[in-house]
Length: 198
Image (cartoon, rainbow, N blue to C red; front, side, top):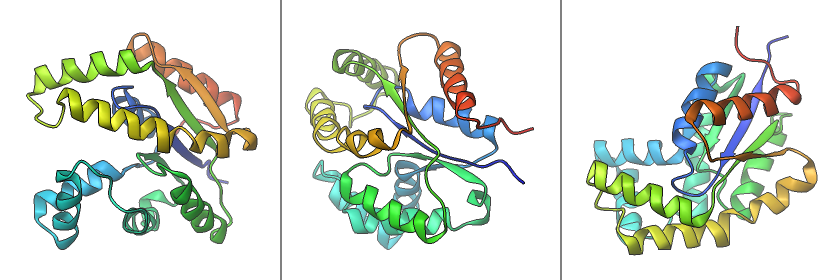
């Protein structure tokens, strides 16, 4: 039987989700399914979806749940996600958790683990300010950073209250070197019986 790993990585902006997500996906032989990447690709290509997303993001809002869930369902139905995936940026609220649960249940599947990268708000802000300075990102203004962290704390953090009772949340200390954090994640997943790709 092929090993599967159906994972979700959660953490505030600046927690290192993107970097760790790529490392996890490569090591487990699964695709990263990042709503941000999917949205950016559509924006870059100027698709109708991209135009809808741009209008929403320009106001500093999040893309509606139905639209986001539809995009994710389509992505998870592709062949490369048959043996697992790493979700990044979805689900980001309880409505999206319900959408994902229904989709996976219909396939006789469920999440194996939720990786929570634990980083303080102050640490997130410092990292995002550094990133803004290094990359010249116009979306990383003080106001935008505070707004996104507020949304995370009010909408996304509560999904852990749904997943916590299921016993699938691994809280990982997000402070340290990249390698140290990766090792903590792998140790937690190994403890769950999830095997690295050969």
